Length: 306
Image 1: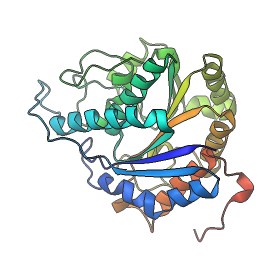
Image 2 (image 1 turned 135 degrees about the horizontal axis):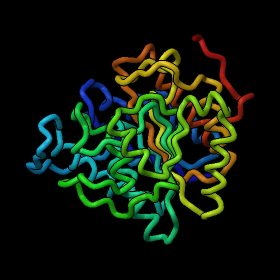
Image 3 (image 1 turned 90 degrees about the horizontal axis):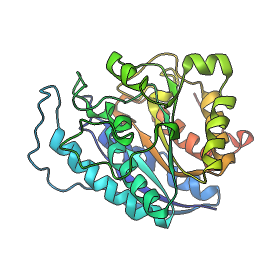
Image 4 (image 1 turned 90 degrees about the vertical axis):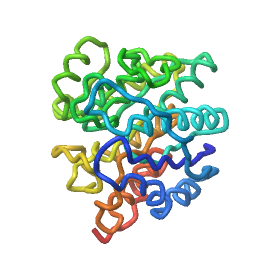
């Protein structure tokens, strides 16, 4: 049994398609809390994080937008994560993926204080390995992994408290990487299990290899699950669709293996845009995936009308 702590992160400023701010409410309406309780976990909903008023930060890259707001979110979510980690397993309900600038920072600070290594598995179509200096879109939801890995060029963001070693990061399901990100990734030892790798090797072997490294190091494991990890045919409610994502069965298999490992200590749910959804279809699927990650078995599936 796990004490699950729901934390809303209605971040919308890391990208340009309005609607992610409605994500936390959509997860609650789709029954995330009751699903967790039905699996025997205890539940605490700490409501939605509210950042402090944004300071007047600027950057030399004129493409960047909403920099002050994203920095304010980063500081608020880092604090929320640090506060929650000693009490249970925080589940951050987003919000666009820029929320991970804060959540991973807070979890990393906790891991450092606890004297344990932090591992991150990035379930996403994108590597999100830009820095504020390299982004051409100006969308800061494309920068969290570079921030967590300790890449330079993040001023005026707070210094990342304890950069995650490259060998402790696994990108899984990647299928859209910009040239600047690709060049930077090649300089690192980050494990990139893109869709070509998963097509050739399958889902199970690469995932279990990474989880064995976590177990051997007695690490904490942060999972960041982006809606666009899934194929847009089953999860349309995301502003950054990339064809060729994981299927319903593959995504559930990933989550079930994560549950069986017993290693997951914190979770992001990001990029859900309810304004783009179809009768709550994507929100329900994401809740179902969290159910699999927290112990729901394949034969427990409910019959769907779609």
